[in-house]
Image: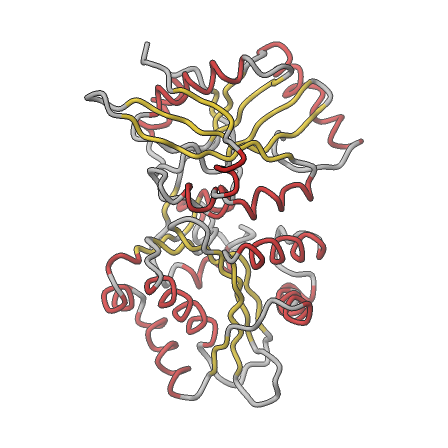
Length: 357
């Protein structure tokens, strides 16, 4: 039995400094562990719980992990979901520490975790051997393209496909203009309108309601951990394409994107992303996550909802697959009842976040 990590709730001072603290995590922190994300998820009825985990390492040292849990409620109890976390050098002490801490939380049914580690059969088996129940992929970023920014601009650009390099150079040569607009309501309106040009005006698969995007963009821009990039291919003043990039943690994320189909200059979307990557390199970010692809075995499957976007993203780099989520079950009988019977009924009656489905 490994020595359990110590787990406690963060202090008000730690919560106020949360975005700086997650950068000290073993994985460098990520958008879904940030203050802005925590506050945004209140929109879905989830309450943020900020945890501090001190995990023992071989040789007597410890490492500190700042983990965000999102608390929801269902008819059979409360649950916690730790998006893309916690990630530790040694997971066994962290799992034991979370188990001990969660058992002291009245009414807590299950803790769903998803360490941000690359997926291998060995890692899945290792976590299952700790008493965790493998669950499903929760995040669109479970399968994604992640670019290493530490190699620098020259090496990163050289790693892109020839098509992307040509598009960036061509758009630049033809005068495609990239700007970072202020996060005003007009900017929000323009961004959302460009996102809706996909699928005959229905938008991309999995798009949320408009109010959620306003909440998300507003939270991240106010925290200083999100920004827009708009691209222009003429002098009309109307953007041809736009992206929203988050910068919380050491990994930047291409969160949202959209464009008008009537482009005058090709390659604008590639140039927008390349400009954002250059800014993130200058700011010392470690990685750039293109936020979602099909799993590798379905990369060429035209029926997958991310197929079209993936064909573009894969020209920047290969798919990386991270671990699925795992359930740390605290009340097995109630959890089985929820999974087998109650869940299907409750989600038909009461709409809500997808966290425990």
